[in-house]
Image (cartoon, rainbow, N blue to C red; front, top):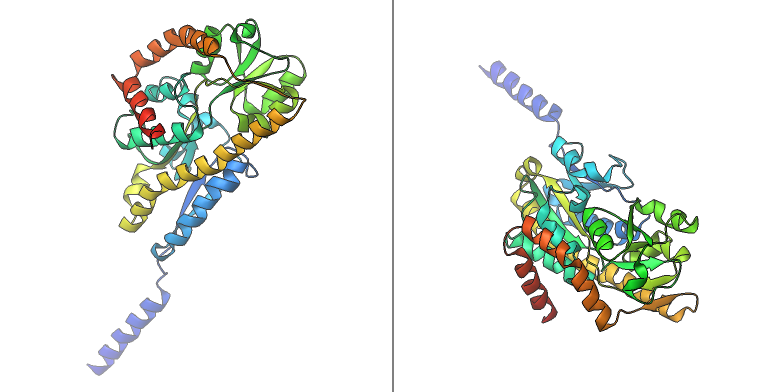
Length: 332
């Protein structure tokens, strides 16, 4: 009897000693923009660092894979999450036309005027259940670029001077907007903008002031028409099954992450835009044109059919909800 007891005890000790410790959960975060970009350095990596410190006791961590390490195609990021190639990924709704029609409203001219307005409006409307899309994922964060501007090689004093100019765009809404304003849209990747402007293949680009600086557009297109032509939404999404498998504390951290990332986007990205605009205004090699009231009215009239088309495809009442949300944000 004693021998059997000792044998069983020894076996139990051996099993305890040889059983592997619980594996830490390492979540792969796919980002298609370069690791050296300000967005990665000042927004994504600080979020990952914060999350990992807070989730250490849960044996959960995030590893950031920037520069398209897990997949370079920006259009395939959400599918990578669905297929388990990545647990979390940066996505851009407008890169897949027709899939997320509610997000098209943010690219419309005349609404959000800054990163703050766009980011808070997008995040809060989604949290309130007013934006369709991403139901098969857990949305970690949602935020926007700054307001689009038109950057050209040659000066452009009024919107009428856009007529016939070849302008780089990204996606169907930007395409429709430039067409409505009299320009000739050219769909190109961000990395192709500066070279094509420099070679005279296009006349300018439609993007915000941070992207214009980061991708050297401002070096070859030093004339900036500071119009309010919409913002671009970014989302960070997570595999739903992976989210469901997380401890409650980690889910709480993920719930806090949306505001954490939006706040950093507003502080860091918004500040970069302000700095660029100030530098261009002080530099005699650059011109910055603020549209007159008459020009703004003309832009609004020309793009109204685009607004109507987007509103018809979106959730009923979303344009009105977006307008009300922006008014609320401006009053804070």
